Each structure stands twice: as C-alpha cells, then as structure tokens.
Length: 444
Image (cartoon, rainbow, N blue to C red; front, top):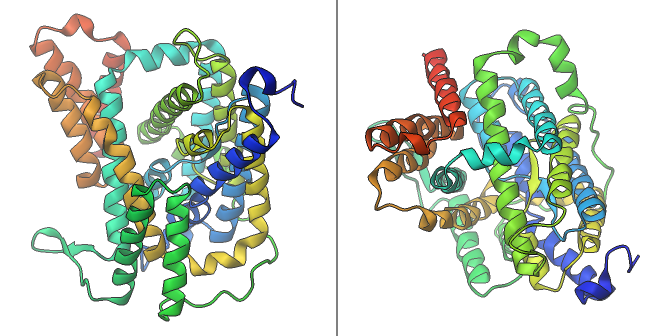
C-alpha cells in the first residue's frame, strides 16, 4: 500500500493521510445536506411534488457519488482530491433548469449524464485541453465569480434576508423573524470560524447553528441518530430511461445549452481545483500536472455515476486543500474521504435538523470563496471588462447561470473585433457565439 501510493517519495505516512482525508471530509460534508435541499427545492414553497426530487434519494446519491468519485481519484490518479456534487452546478440544475426553464428534473439528469459522457470522450481524445484553451481566461474567471454571486443570492433568500418586492423586485426581509435571526447567527459563527482558519469551519458552523435552532425551538429534535438508508429507487437510472422515453425533450437547442453549461462549469472547476491543490501539495512538475488525464477521467466518471444515481454534476472540490494543509499528499487521503462519505449514509435521520436557515450561511460563504477570481480579471481593458462584467452580473439578476455565460460569450467576440483583436479569438469561440445566439432566439 505504501509503495502503491509512494509514501516514501512524498514524505508522508498513514497517520498524515488519514487526518488529511478526514479533514477534507469535514470541510466538504456540508454538501450532504445542501445538495438534497437544493435539488428538492425545499426552500421554494407551493411547488408541485413532480418538480421536486426525492430528498432521501438525493442524499444517498450525493454520498455514493462523492465516495465513488473520491475513490477513483485516489486509486487511479493518486491525488489527495475529493469529489462531490458541485456547488453552483446544483443551483443551476434546480433553480435555472427545473424552476426557471420548467425542464423536468428527470430530463435535467439526462443532461448531466450527457455532459459526463462528453467529458469522458473529450478527456480520452485530448480535445478537452483545446476547448478549455479556446476560452479566454477572463471569461473563465468571470463564470466562477458570477456563480459565486448567484449562490450567495440564493443563500440570502433561503435565510429570509432578501425577499420579493413587487416595487423594486427585491428587498430586505424581516430581520426579527426567528429563522432569519438563526441564519444571521449562523453566518456570524461561520465567518468567525473561517476567519480563524478552522478546518471544516462551514460544517462546524452548520452544526452550531442547528444546535442553537433546536435550543430555541425553531428546529425539531431528530427522532434518532442512526437509521435505515433511504431508497435510491426514485432517482436511480432515471437519467438513462428518460433518453428513450422523452427524446423530444432531450434533443433541443435549450438542452444543448444546458449540457454545454454543465460541461463548461465542470471544466473550469476541475482544472482550477486540480492545479491549485497539486501546487499546494508540491505535486506539480515543470509547471505541469502529472497524471492529469487520469484525474480528469476520474472527474468525468464521477459525473456519469452521479447522474445515474440521481444527482447533479460531480466535480473536484477545492476544500481538498484543507486536507492537504493537514498533511495529505497522496490518493490514500481521498480513499479515506470516500470511506467517510459511505459511512454517512447511515446517519440520514440527523438531517432533519439541517433546515434552509442552517444551510444559508454555507451558501453565502461558498459564494465569498468563489468571487475571489474577480481579482484575476484585467478590468483596465474595456473589451475584456464588458463581457466579463455582463457574465458576472447577469447570473444573479436573471437567476440563471446559463444566461450569464451566454451573454458573456456573445459580447466577447463583438468587443474584441471592434477593438481590432479579432485574430486573437479562437474559432471555437465563434461557434459558441452562434450557439448562444440561437439559444436566445429559441427562448424568444
């Protein structure tokens, strides 16, 4: 085992890898709660049950997809990088595709499945790098920042801090309401923990908030700690079945844009996370990432597995950096993280205490972490600043990640050509320009 994971070469041992794997799990365990709440649209009242995914099934799918993805990453790519259904992608799935576009969640899962299969093909063929390189870095950074603002907006909504206002679209909620006060308390606690650099600060903040909520009578006490594992039947295999049952809903311009959005965001998340974590762990060689193809293959396989189980796109988690900071250097840490995710499925009854106000601070803090990419954009160049800004601002204002990407990718070729920099635009960007123009035409 030590030889397989190269413990001696990397100067590590079982204890460091175990602690690193556990730290990574604690840092990203919030997804076990946030993902089911997001995909089941728990925070949105008065919806038909048909629009909501089964909470228990999504919880199990989330845990297993994270376990499988982390296990493949650990054994195949041998990196201390854990995977789980991605933040931002789950919000796009639930709030844009299902809630705004009215696409059935079953069809949306098929979109995730297609994006995963395409990701595998692109990775094996080597085309993935060409596509990523064709998209300017400013737009990549803008997409990440825009998703961060979108997630934060959802967090404030779930907290009751931001509410609907017919006169000005949005307004400040009742800050004296019990659940809103609980969410604000949770935000303060989480900010303090994260500022202090506490590993697993988001997860610990949720636990403290839930305990305070129970003490205040805002949250019911759980009936038990350990219980039966919820059934996967409501979501298992639905993505595959829908392709044959409803082909007319699958092969459309709208679905093409949805698949491309899943694909693009996963591209950026995975590439950025792998480079960042590998750099931190000292695993980069000559500014290149060893076994990059295997790492990307692990990520894409995890997305396919997750879609078949019943969850949104599974991707690499930047929270893995917490595990690296605790000593993780090899894929054994990812195997440890996978084990904890599998163990978590037996503690489903505890999720009853994790309500929308409890998870709202986590969404807000994740948004803070994601908008850090704003500093990477060269705002002094107007031809770049315009498409980047429109990408960022359109996501929360239109309540759609896809729309933000589409607006930015349409304006970029226009501003660059007018500036006389048309030759710098990759031909793939022109193809994407046409696709996104057709997207708006189709919506109209």
